[in-house]
Length: 468
Image 1: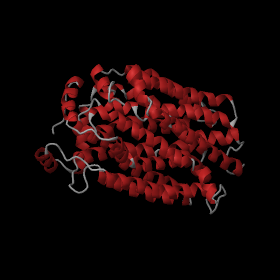
Image 2: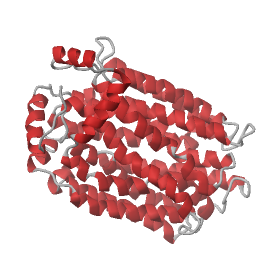
Image 3: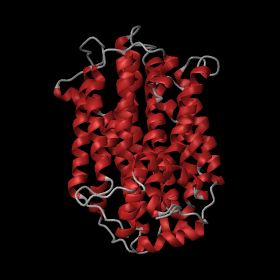
Image 4: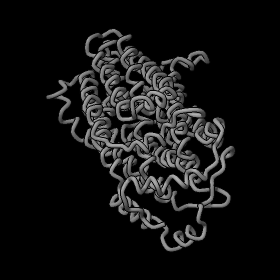
């Protein structure tokens, strides 16, 4: 299939006849095809809540934390578009199109999760962070494209909503490990030379098993549709294959980028410039302000309690995410996707602002629950808007490029925050959270730069009998 260049209206006319040919799947079929996402998000939950404390346990400077998090956005920027383009042009009668990438990424992720809490030095933890993010990105991008492959236009919204549910549920399980594991005799007491608490170590070991189990569930319960035009696909595969063509495909897709995708840039930029501050500094802010533990040396017990409480905060954050995920479609059907996303981004900003007004640990629980509502929208609304504007044959590469809208702002964040941390943020991790709130307000305003056709709205959110 040649690169598609044309207006969004023409594009919709091109895409929709194909979508109508796809059979309607049952809820449990959609559940099974998305189940591997549960393991991926368990791994992300462990990373997001625990990596900054692990770096601090290994004597990293607080201002250097953002730079140590660069692994995530850079591997995402490099890996996801390439994997997307390669998976678009992959087909095996035995393995399918996306499944080989699910499996390879899961194996890499499992290996990194098991080794991570046994890091003996900062360089080792930082290196494993790169490996962990590479594995997660290899697995996650094909799961996003899987929705476009398997579901007709009317069911795509439900597909992304189920993935959003697994985002919340998988990360919640990871965040509740400090409260579940003590039931089995595993406590916050550290063992080994690196002083990392036992509950962190066993949480990572469980994660290594969980991602393999969840991905295997999807592999064995879900099939993939073969290419619709097999002769054309085989010709294309013979003429254009390998890593070089994957790069070429990325640049071709950039040239033909739909206008809706371009308009989403500022929404994604402000959102993802701010959000890394939450993962980098929430646990450190809680430890400092709620437990009087600025570092693991001055007050090791308080620092461990801060880590434990931040995991609970992230658990409620994810409860908010999957709790709102199935309410988003009817809300968006009534007020539109742009307005829905803007409203929930604003709610998230209020959650961050609230943390400035009290040192009580309960303040962080309430604030992160509000942020979780925004997270549910962040993980679904932009993808639904995008999926109605790109050609099916290039869904993988465009989903990968859209990830660039996430990772580029993160890279900018992680380069600039070390210079702002002392002078602008006053060396206080809580001020970093307030900056995140400001960014979400700007992202909410940018939602109204996105222009969508009524046709696309109706395709994504059908109203009436049989709707969701």
